[in-house]
Image (cartoon, rainbow, N blue to C red):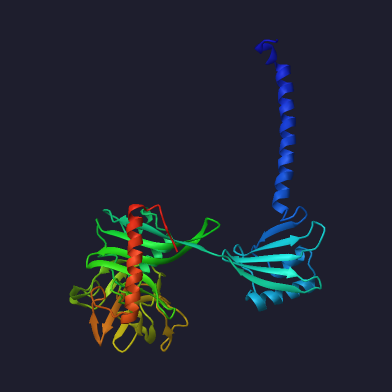
Length: 418
């Protein structure tokens, strides 16, 4: 037997390295061929499937012709997609197409268009040049997930929510809900606790996206704010408080989410430009120039123009009692004019510093029965409450959901199957 130092001499080591390289090359070649076969093969050994993700500049015609389909096929497929699936265009970086052939040398016999994780459109060739279209809804595995947090010193609700593991999109939805009852500048303090229950959608045990906010609770300064999502017997969906009263008000207290209040409603305030004391009939929210301004509620534009104090301003009438005014705009939305009906949340203009203003901000007013009121404290009417019969069903649902929340509070890693 040779000694170790003889085995590991330069010549033997070179031969050993060369031999290993040849072996690794053979193994790598086998793996590549195996992987390529796996990714292109379908249900049977001969079936060939390829997937194309729609890129910028791609059209249905272009992608189909690249797969060897004829112009007659393109016309038939485009017609079937529009008529039976409502698809007339493809979206870059979102839609994808799967092409299946009986074998690598045969023409495409099946096309699957995937416009969303929850919907597939199958096109199959009937052999006579026609294409049949069938839409398939992918079953969702929806789970209710619980997250809770606490406001710390120097926190915003958004930061506390991120720390609690609440997804950004869900936090935006929660902001929109709580903004009907809360002022995020004044009502958020260290020590306040909150929790959120929201949907997570899975397919084949893999999370695809988030769904709706099912319930939210926040320990606000004016009392605990709770909202529950509930589907009524007629199929309509709304958010209600623990008593079954409509939680969504007709107007939002803070039109721009997470904007800092720079000047409060006051009967006596020293005007920053004029220098003397007079009433400040609204609330000022700091925001950078160009920030979109959403309508605080559904209504109709009754005034749009310019004056020395407000600069560019818009006034909305929401019903017989309430109006809102938005001032110091940098510009208006082109199609939002006097007489235009707007929905809640629709952008009506953009933050600026026109008129008597020392910097970019939104001046926001609520007028009730012709009198200015404090947007942060006025009691706002709910859009709709539940009747006695529906309230009874709601209370049963709420108790069931609250019971689930109690279980998830003790074991937050679990979820409720919906």
